Image (cartoon, rainbow, N blue to C red; front, side, top):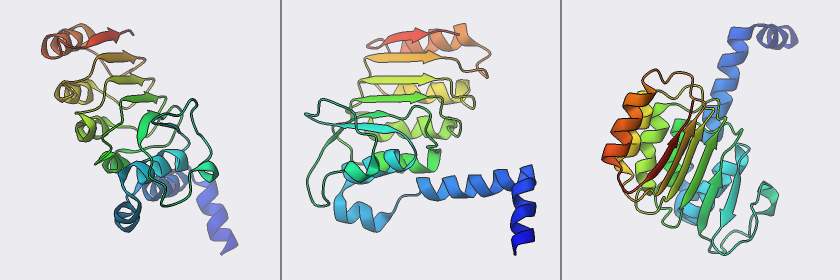
Length: 187
């Protein structure tokens, strides 16, 4: 058993697969927990479990410690997510369903983030006002075009996306289709 484990650790491909599987599990929605505690708490748990920070409505500071969440059963509303340097993945974005007060989201240096995740921001299209997508190496033009559905968005900050080849064209499309939004799109 020890030899098998050591082989997996030494084998880069196996290690990647193992960590990918672990991250998938850390991002999976627990439907029973969602039903019992609601969207805001389970979404906050998801973000904190994966290394991000959250801010509740009426809170002054961000919370980054999973163990400092309010007691189960206490009603809370999630207002902001800072997922900087976290391991969130697209399959976890279902946690956003039902988060009616979520107005700000920062997706910075999220190494596992892919285009499908941005499509799922549609779950919070009625409340999201501020979005930053930066240094997320797997995001392409396809992902950014999903943001057009966010018609209440007022601020969009985008930079450091290496797979964006048609920056000027995408910026033009976003500005044309999101006239209500102040867009900053740097290289």
